[in-house]
Length: 244
Image 1 (cartoon, rainbow, N blue to C red):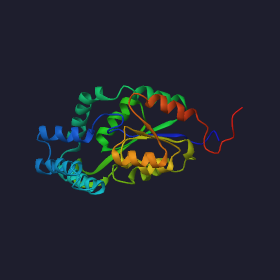
Image 2 (image 1 turned 120 degrees about the vertical axis):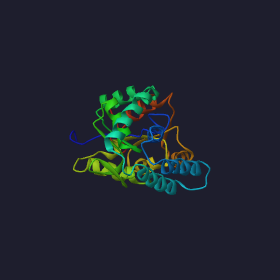
Image 3 (image 1 turned 90 degrees about the horizontal axis):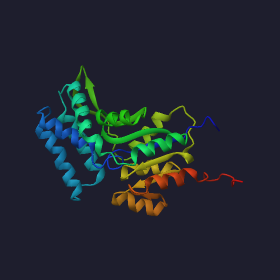
Image 4 (image 1 turned 45 degrees about the vertical axis):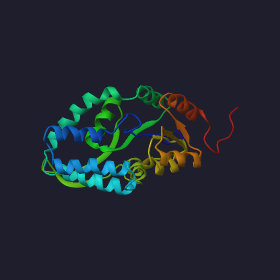
């Protein structure tokens, strides 16, 4: 039993950070005239259509990732890497106050933390480095000979992708799914929530809020997420014999 892995999966955008880091990176790229402006503006247009209810989530994700990749076509990878670090230096102070205590709490409870979020890997890696988390997966855009090709390798924020990423990262490990923890705010987190024993919907978007109510998942805010996490981690796993 001691060899079985307890994993804590953490979302970033809207969960650890009050916004979308990929959006901030794209704004910085546009400001530096370092990407295709028309395609970059197309990403923002797609996001607006989704917020207005004109398109569904799956359509939004597919179009946004495709346009983001095309906006980066031909751009030097080191240019984006450097801009990502610069953006993070500006945005790191916006991490919610509970984040570092939460990461420490999970570590002390024997959890191996994994970040999976929809923003580009270039940004998500900055968050992981900041928090001392060894594994992080964000969106991957194809690279060749030091430049972006205009294609998408991994749409980490698309529906169902987080569950597949979890399987890929933990392949070969004995994972205690009923004791695994997940924290996220959107419908993209639902596939993982369905599988893992300790899901927490953080200030959930409406679609996830409905599912959380239906499934009986814990719901938390930035004020009470630490206490709710402590309670979840302390509770016996389903099917465990009573203590004492």
